[in-house]
Image 1 (tube, rainbow, N blue to C red):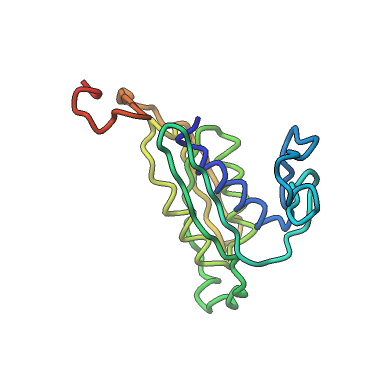
Image 2 (cartoon, rainbow, N blue to C red):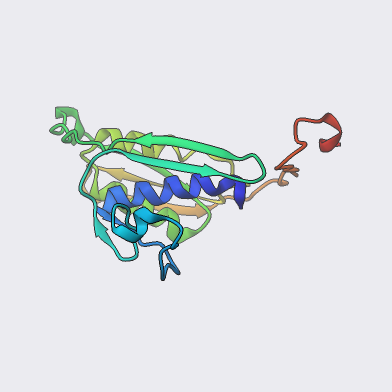
Amino acid sequence: PEPASGLAALAKVLLSLEHGLWAPNLHFHNPNPKIPALQDGRLQVVDRPLPVLGGNVGINSFGFGGSNVHVILQPNSQLLPPPAPHAALPRLLRASGRTLEGVQGLLELGLQHSQNLAFMSMLNDIAAPSPAAMPFHGYAVLGSQGGSQEVQQVPAGKRPLWFICSGMGTQWRGMGL
């Protein structure tokens, strides 16, 4: 899990920004007595949900095996533009996922935000994975009376075999062999 820790931190920050609350750190009880800033209150560990007050967010993840991540994020403060005149035209929304419920959830999300063309475009862009990765595919017709919707399981072909060699030595040709 160490190579993916930066992605986990990114997902946690994005969800916190989206919901307006900082997610607490699990299993935190007492601050480290060797860190004076935690003792005198200059730094605070988030141990309960706290409101997001804005500003930039830094993510750092430096692993023992050489996996390093650093990114600075700024919350999106732009208001959504008003719907374009052509947003009222019927549109096709595609979705794919690992479960029937997941695809139905994406289609419902699309129905809720059908006037946000940028969001709709993003949902359509991520609907392209192969059936081996996402065996359920579906569609919904948005903006029409009776808007039809369907989700089916697509038969998958043979799944490819992948070898992942993380940590030290991956740059050496013999490690992959």
